Length: 233
Length: 297
Image (cartoon, rainbow over all chains, first blue to last red; front, side):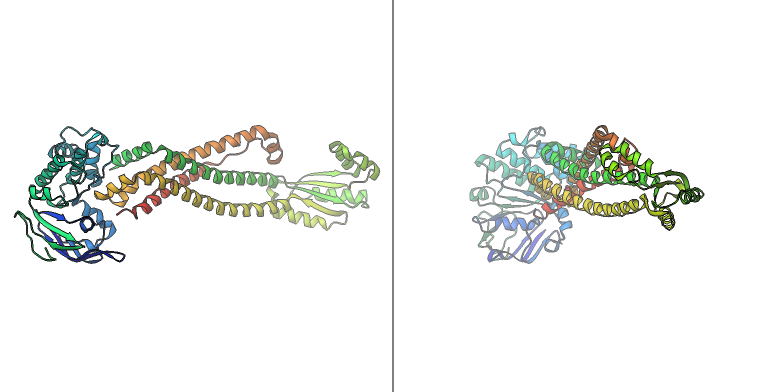
């Protein structure tokens, strides 16, 4: 599903990522962990084409993202849902508008949008909240809206960059439960986090980044997913 | 898709009225400048047309020419096929006319005597011969007559004015291009502020897989609507100014142009200005958003 071969990313003199080799299978749930500045966000940003690797090769569903032309990038993103720590929502719009945006962009018919948006809001626990203003929602609810927007078009991959970073404990758990439910439906999920408690509560494969390298990939509690030691995972 | 585009366009206009108003004002101002140039060009053409129709030639006679020679000259001129009207004006008649029209010159004319002004033969050419070339060749031929000291005709003025009009048109085209480019630049920068205000929306659309054309389309449509509004406003303002000028200075126009009402821009010009406004609005918006998209990951 996702394959990185000797991928590196350099900003000026600084190496954000160095010689990263990672394979993630279809339907896996993987944590990308590490301290702040370890390269977690850079790793995810490369997966949805917001950053281009400086070296190496990156494949998603067999497509070489490294060589993807600008005009092909939107089609990659339609297959890769992204969730941010700061939600990235249109606060002055309704919940339904925010979620429908993903479908409008791909030219989905109106009746399909009318059916799909309530269904996915139901999935993230926001049933009947289509008409609510996003600005009026709590942080946890806003993150659910962001998740709904990311999965409404059934992407093969879901990337979440510190999705619980702005949430309190109970809300963070709820969001993680939603992400796991999405994974159980077959979506490949990668979550960047440094929340050890959540990783222990929801044990899955871990890729630990340090100084731009993948140093280990060992879940404390064995869970589904492949892992290997060293700089390859 | 069209329904979606219209909805997004109207929402953009409604959410950012300030940017819409400023963009429309810039387009209006630019089109008023271009429209004003077109109007002035049109008025000059009308004046030149009136001058050309009024193909008048004055033959100034030598003081020592005999009455017989003058009469023979008048007969010869009358016999010409291109001539429709001939009037012989004696020295006394010329002085009388000048005294009547410029009484302040009376004392000076008294000192100079009755023959202060030369006699003349005033000739009007027929409409079919009222061209610069015909008037020039007619004047040159009569200049050679022994009774004639000099010949004045409007053809020279018309030729010079036409040359000026040609230059004015060229300058106007360059001016129009410069104004359109300036409008494009100003609108693009104004819109850039609007795009920046909507950067979250643009970034999110990019994030969920919107193509550049999907993002640009409603902005370009907004620009086209603003351009159309700016064009109509500019034409209404120009029409109003033209009407005011006619009311204030109709007599002057009647004297110079032969008609008190200033002619307004013809339909093809109005259509062209509208098209220019729509194009400037749409292209400026598209350029601005495209530039912004270059900075969005």
